[in-house]
Image 1 (cartoon, helix red, strand yellow):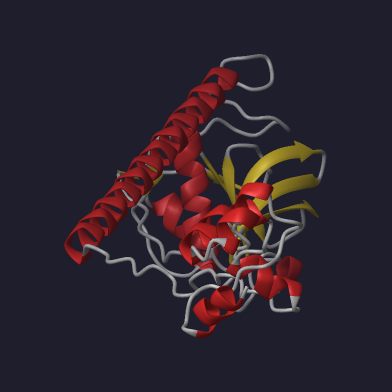
Image 2 (cartoon, helix red, strand yellow):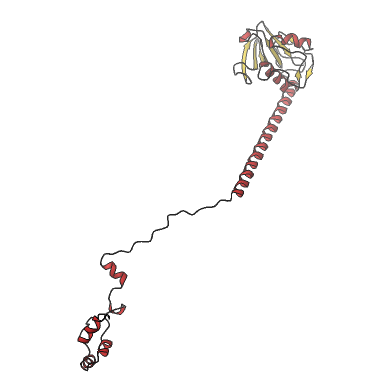
Length: 262
């Protein structure tokens, strides 16, 4: 035993007594062979002895190893600016092409609808409602005057709106005069058109200043229906303002003249 204590004090591993030694161990120890006593005695250190390893030993006294933290730095994404710019330009060009195609489609539909409207109106003129040369309400036959391929009035005004409705119905613009609405009856008669005080569909109504709210320049509109002395018109730059149409039904009174479409 003294030899074992001496070995421990010299820096070796401390052996723990694990019960009474076997007879062979005792006899060897008494014979004075220290190395045999140490080698025969059961080891008190290491996994086989049941002694807690270093990590478990630290946990046994209340120490917990810190948990590994996840990296907080976000990955850096490097953009290819050339590719990004090329894609942006391609998307912009595609959007412009689609917008142009949509605008062309709308224009084509509008043109088709206008042609269909003129075709329907012309076919109606050959029906039982009225004929090409004689209007309703005992209106006289109409003569044809000077024609134009363009709307020569000021855009947005009542004059432009009335000429536009004439074109939608007849396929051309009446021409041969200029000036304010109040002078249109005289100008149209001079250009060869029939002008009458009898209201008739497919005609431009000319109102003198003050008639049904007309301004000092007079007012014109397109007649769409006649019922006795009640006249329904479509007019621009009146109740709805410049460039816009509205519909009114008026009483035929003095100061109202009608330019007939032939």
